Amino acid sequence: DIGIALRLPARNDDGSLRFALRVAFPRNDGSGGVRFVLPSRLVEVDTVFAMTVHKSQGSEFAHTALVLPDALNPVLTKELVYTGITRARDWFSLVESL
Image (cartoon, rainbow, N blue to C red):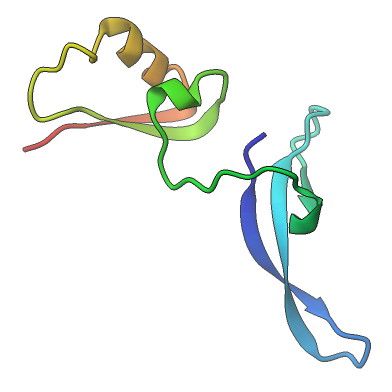
């Protein structure tokens, strides 16, 4: 699963405001809802801001961007591009150098 770490507002016992760290995951029950988990409940976590197409296989994201290299590369195959494009559920962006 892929989650997003968030600082959520919460109240202390005395009513004062504090922020609690939670990780939000999409529910897998088809409801479209979100479940929040304490970070201490997660056993192994990789923090990412971007990932390779290979690492993204088996995952789906609302929006993905595929960044093409500046020069021809034998690793960049039509299968790799197809996999990168099909990770997007709603929106896909293709990025190339100018």
